[in-house]
Length: 377
Image (cartoon, rainbow, N blue to C red; front, side, top):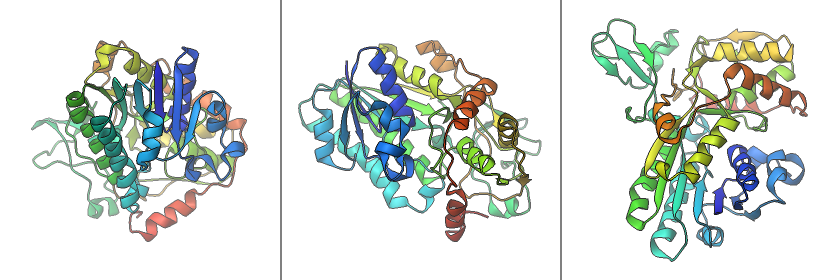
């Protein structure tokens, strides 16, 4: 097949491109080579870009340009739409940028497909677990509930667990399935919800099969070690390698579902080639919640570098407490099962980091920026 991957020089996109090339598909990549992800000189500073640039039809451009879209779509039969701004915290103050790239970029693609002749038969959209906001919980009094955003007043007092009106017993965290309530707590989450809904609504009306993947926290060798707005494994690794203390937000018990890059690529590949995926929405994760303090301790152990792990009670507005995926649906329909557990995956990630040149990082600058905006407490 002829397949277009937007954002195809990024972490997931480049790995997917290499997988598809190994299966003899013809790949076009549209990517703007963002400095935040690829550095100032992508030809020399971006291993992700270098891994694909001579193997694909590469178009340097942006999804906010109609001309770039038209040039990229051409004879392609499948579009995998990864290109997006992807920082939860950053999205809360770069609002116009996130909505322009994520929402308007997707709208431009659909507008072209709805009004011109083309060969596109399927669109795969990268959605996100962020559209769920807080995860799904079980209450002894009320059954399944979906708590709203946590209040600053309680978190200022060190009370970080979620609450729900009418529930007096502690809430029990359960896996979030695809039918769970959609209530994002960040502008980024709102834009991913909008992308997903546009794809799933418009595509069937113009004869294109839509597929949406709600990715959990994707990690693995090759992810950006310089982007301070995404990926706590990269952020923590850079701090540890530079001998700096790690600021563990809240009480360190907030948790996420960390899914290895190879599993994400495999799930996405199945969505491309299998007709059973058409018109469906899938969670992509491991179904296991790992708390942040465990992540930090594991990385310290893997690198054999001792740095202070300071549980500070700091927090970011818009951050959720917990979320992990129910992956029953993708298992049944696409026969997908994650192969890499967190213990093995973080080991492979650490091995890769050990072979990289580690810069000073810009994490502290990003926190200062969020604090200035009133988003970091």
